[in-house]
Image (cartoon, rainbow, N blue to C red):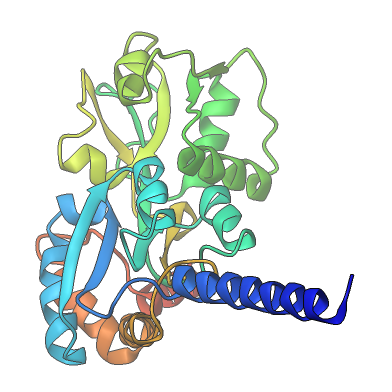
Length: 287
């Protein structure tokens, strides 16, 4: 290869590297700044808290906040990963932690909690109705061998495992049944057909997403049966512009601030639906 050919090859290589770097930059900051697009898990919206909170957050932060998706968690994740949302408000869990490990989600911030309840037969054969101690209720179910369905929903599963661990409770097949419902949305019907108890989220029950059939909420109000909502900002591989990242950070900082927590409490009309951070801490200490 002569010097001229060498120089031409070098120029082509440098041009190729420059093009590749420009392409990488375009991918990482491809979306022009605009409204801050929020994707929220359905329960936050269904109970009415999110629309009221979004309005208060927009006023406090001077951001143009737009809700682009309201859906179950499994439907929100691809919306965020594809760059169609800038922030997710979602339960913490393996799926969102996985996106964080892959670089799509940035540092997660806990900003609120929802709670779970124990639903059982309306006539309450176990005598746990009207109580607020999940561990004591589980011990009562175990000691009396009252049927309990271990719901396979990740949130409910985590709550049940926590109660069993804290209460020193060992499940056995003479009182615990596996969830064999064809559809997770049919868990209450499945439990009702077996006169069994089950742990489910309170919001889906109160909003009618999960319908009671000869059943009622028996145990509610236990801080140990709460689950965290996290705010997920764009990570390094998310195609958000720097301006959008700054807007997301400002929005999340508001959510976790005293002002944002007060706004959450004010938006919680007809509840409580969600529990602010400070209220959860106080309840946990009191318990």
